[in-house]
Image 1 (spheres, one colour):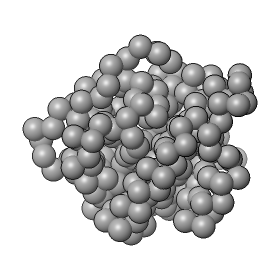
Image 2 (cartoon, rainbow, N blue to C red):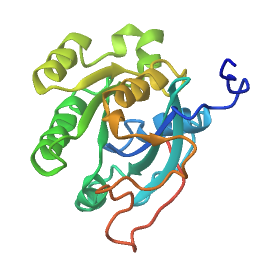
Image 3 (tube, rainbow, N blue to C red):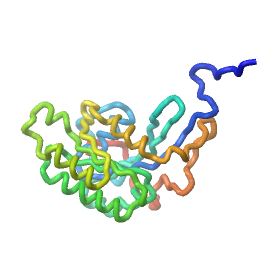
Image 4 (cartoon, rainbow, N blue to C red):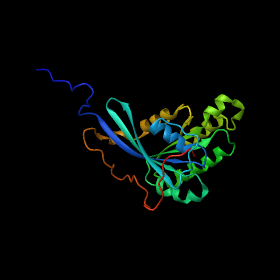
Length: 220
């Protein structure tokens, strides 16, 4: 007798589930939280307050019918007074998105400093993506661009980073950014989908300091 196929819409026993810790870094007002809000809730809010400490959110991506990736996302505050807290969030992170504002000339240099810090202090196998945000402003008015795509792309290539220009407002390249990160992660470590998803060995999903404020997403 031929084997019976699993009912449509129900995952088979060979499907995989993996979860990874992801941190967003960047200066204030570059749009980190707006990117996360777009990715997690498919929303955009121009009038959200600044993050205090960090915000924690989750979202899943289906790479194919057999593989699901769950991101445990720490969206860090960009203000200078919170910079010293960043290591608590990127320590043991599997991946990071460093965001800059393509309409601000100094923004890429500040992003480079974050990348350098990650490469020096974070997990040696961390996947880093560089995201130039606010593409919608440049699409509307090209003269607002302060950082040429070619310059950022060349830097990302040299530093071994994924690179995207995004718009949290229009959603352009936001999902593509996170999908590209998911495809770079060690999915061979994923467990069976029917098992209860838990923390992967050796991966801390929470910062070590439990007193850090955690607020909802914002536009910076």
